[in-house]
Amino acid sequence: MAKLLYQGHGSLRITTVEGKVIYLDPYAGEGYDLPADLILVSHGHSDHTAIDLIKKRVDDCRIIQYTDALVNGEYKTFDLGYATVEAVQAGNNKNHDINVCVGWLITLSDGITIYATGDTSTTDQMRELGEQNIDYAFFCCDGKYNMDIEEASACAALVNARHSIPYHMVPGKLFDRKRAEQFTGPGKLIVEAGEEIVFTQN
Image (cartoon, rainbow, N blue to C red; front, side):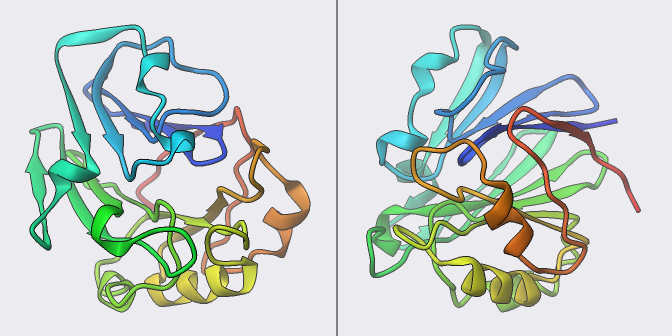
């Protein structure tokens, strides 16, 4: 089964059924020891771009940055065989220009779909994402640089994923249990920093 390690803050590691390893926004926590097949960077802030933490990479490791994923206003889709990666809207008026930020919608070869908002507030696209029967969705909720718990919970209701997971909760902290428990959303799931979950189809 495919699985996910929540490294903390906004950093995730996915291992597919084929054994391919995908890192999203490397920066926080541990677990950078597996050789990378794919590295995704949602925007240019330093707490999302620490790709040098990933010392081991397969020979054809792909790095897809926001500059590759959003070109002249067009959100790109990348078919990698073991996964399809679709860039989606992200950004806000606080600290993240929507023209240089993306979120990620990842569809694994076994059909599991994962949405990671990146750094954002509510976007026009979230209602559309709500029609896609997403399995696991991660929502930033720090309330300082991005949307707060209340807005993130409302976004989770829009996206209506099978499992809604808070992340990127407090600047400088890997995880915050109090904020995580305040988050609401369909199929709310709390995943602690350093915890690994196995993706399920139901």
